[in-house]
Length: 317
Image 1 (cartoon, rainbow, N blue to C red):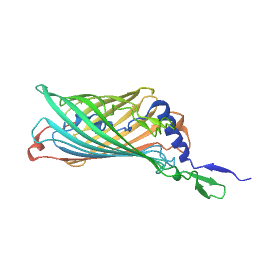
Image 2: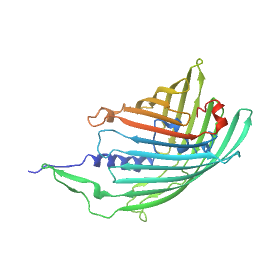
Image 3: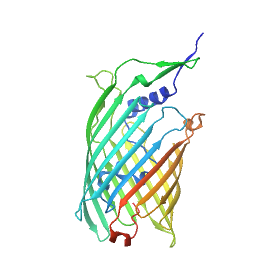
Image 4: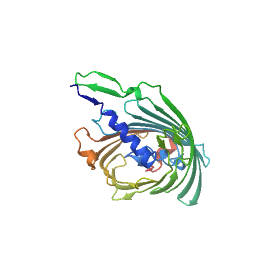
C-alpha cells in the first residue's frame, strides 16, 4: 500500500486560514517594532526630521517549509521645514512558498503641531491598497518514492482591496506615545457573492510607547511596548527592554505575551546607517516542535543627514 502525505507547507497554510477565519486578518508582526513605527502608525511620518529609508525582513518559524516570510520597505520625510510629513510603505507577506502572496502599498501624510516647548503632536492619515493572490497549484502531494504532484489544478485567485487608516503620535526627545488604526475598512477577501468566504480583514488598534532613561554618560535604558487589539482575537502585548551604549550599540530582550521571547541587537554603523537583528523563540506548543527553529529578523535604516544635523543630539525614536 502506498503512503501519501502532504507537504508540511499545507499545515502552515491551514493555520493561516484558520486564524483569519476565526480572528480576522492580522497586520504584519515584527519584534523590532520600535524601529518600524510607520508600518503601524501613519502619524510617525516625518517625525525624525530628515529623509529616512528602512527595510525589515522577518522569517517566521525557521525550519518549517512554507512558513511565513515578511518584507517591509518604507521611506518618510518632512516636507522641507514645514509641519507636513509624507511616507510610502510596502509590505509583502509570502506564505507557503508562493501559495499565499499579499502585497500592501501605503501612502501616508502627517501634520505636526507643537504642544509644548519640547513636545510635539502629530496627526496621520494613510491610504492603502492590498493585493492578495492564492495559488494552490504550489501545494504538493508526496508519495513514498519522493514523487510530488500538485494537490489542485485551478487558476490563481487574485483580489484587490483598498483601505485607509489614521493615527496620533506624541513625542519628545525622551518619550513617545502613539495610537493608531492603520486599516479602518473591514474588507472581505474572496467573498464570491456570499460563497466561499476565506477571510475578513478586521480593524487593528495599536498603542505604542517608549522612553529613554539616562543611566550614566554612556548607557541609556530604552523600554518600549506595543499593544494590538482586534475584535475576535486575544489582546497582543509586546514588551521590550534595550540598553544603548555610547549611542552606537544596543542590546536587549523582548517578550510577546504568552507567545515568544526574543533577543535583540542593533548597531549604528555610521551617522547614516543602522542595522538591527532579532531572534524569537516560541514559548507555546509550536515552539517545542521539532521543525521550528524560531524566527529571525534583520533591519536596516538609512538617513540622509544635513550638515547641521550632525551636531544635534541623536534621535532615539
